[in-house]
Picture 1 (cartoon, rainbow, N blue to C red):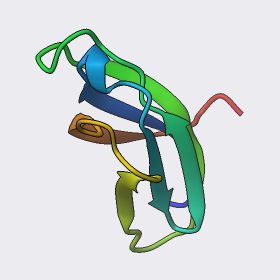
Picture 2 (cartoon, rainbow, N blue to C red):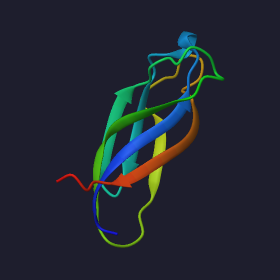
Picture 3 (tube, rainbow, N blue to C red):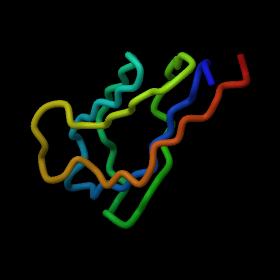
Length: 87
C-alpha cells in the first residue's frame, strides 16, 4: 500500500567490523548510515534506521556498502517496513 513506512534492520556486526557504511534504497528513497557493532556475529539487534515514502505497486529494495568494507559489512537477517500510523 502507498504511504510512509518505518524501516527497521535486524542485523549482527562484530565490534571489530563496525564503522562500515551502508546504503538502503527503495523506490527512490535512500538511507545511509554507519554500521554499529552489536558485540559479536551472533548478537542480533533491531534498529530503526529511518522512514521511506512508497507509492502503490511494486518496489525493489537493495542494501549495499557505501565505499570500501573493513572486514564484513554486517549479517543482515531481515529488513522490516512498518506502515506509519502516527501521522
